Length: 166
Image (tube, rainbow, N blue to C red; front, top):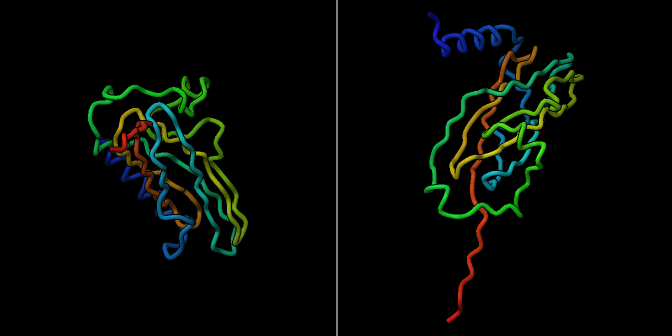
């Protein structure tokens, strides 16, 4: 029986072998950082890719399904959820996945002309807990094979503290 990790390594190794160079990168940024997002809401970010070569490049966005959730801050039921700050629309709630996700309408593939740029996504961050969330996206392409870009976000709560002056 082949382990999932073994299959992932085999697939990644195969993709890397299809790359034509390892001295270049199609990634513009080193990571995708999401701001602190209220639990029950989401925020979107895009990934910009570049073609640093004089040949056309085809790129594909693939979201890694594994996420690490850590650094959680207390029980989620200490404070009430404030629906007035909720950024998620009803249609999105039913289709959303907690953590990082790529909606069905996202741009996941692009043909990038020499020395040009393209934008892939969006990637949604929709936290279910007051924790740190870490994931990754893969950018498969015919120039470097496959490149990984970390995704980082924090789930939080909206609260307001009023202090009395003495």
